[in-house]
Length: 352
Image 1 (cartoon, one colour):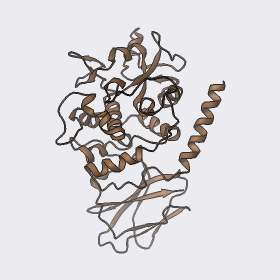
Image 2: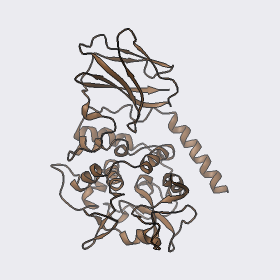
Image 3: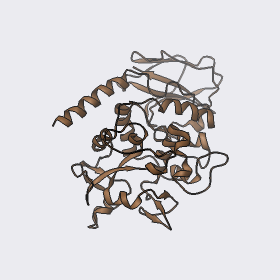
Image 4: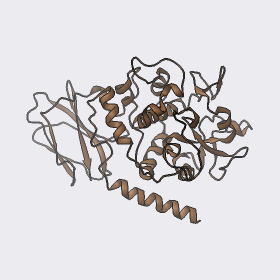
């Protein structure tokens, strides 16, 4: 009971800390590409709760990895079958079954400790820093975790398991999750966590990113549990995985096969000084859009959240109705997408 109360207070206090800050992506210039965008996002994700430790990472798995189909269980990465009588292949497990014994689950470092350079260090419950980064930790069956060990990732298909000699395939369901976690680790820790340390294959052009992870990021869209983890980890750890919020950011930085674009950035024309959205932050129930300098007709104005969901949409736009009602939406960071007959322009909007 005391541990639960402590965790509740920890979550509450850190939630208040994060909510007191600017909405997450406010300072990022999404018109940038490659190294410039990488650098801006790296600075952003480096802001975190420094006291967060490996024990905290254990305690929050029941929230971050909760199975939305059965809230008494957690989802197990690499798992694929709850009904074959073999607990090693389980896809889910009771939240109460944490431990190091057979048919229990534990913390899997997707980027193994031993493969980073230098090594991430000992994983004791009081350890902080890279070894405790919860964006790199997932619930995993104890034996499945051991089976993976520190094998590098390699291309494959079907269920998770060893591939050839000394490599590992995470499974069709989990390969996108893995790719976005590796991308986060490289973004956050740079040369300590180069993708080549943890995966096999060729690099994408002149970048350090492996085509393997860009392909997985493109083939396997973001899952509900990834979004769930991102929201909770921002509240307790202070940062997010940008490649979960929008996998297309990886395409903008490293190239390769275009990934899911949850913000429609690929259709956006960034050079636009002829529209103005105000007030920003939006403090009341309306925003005003001044497009009097536009030569094109406006077809639609949409408000899109960081998960790519259109929360409001306005059609039949004219200069006679410059204000748009935005009540009953959560506070946070949004894109205002302005669609014309030929282009899409965007503005970043904070709603308080």
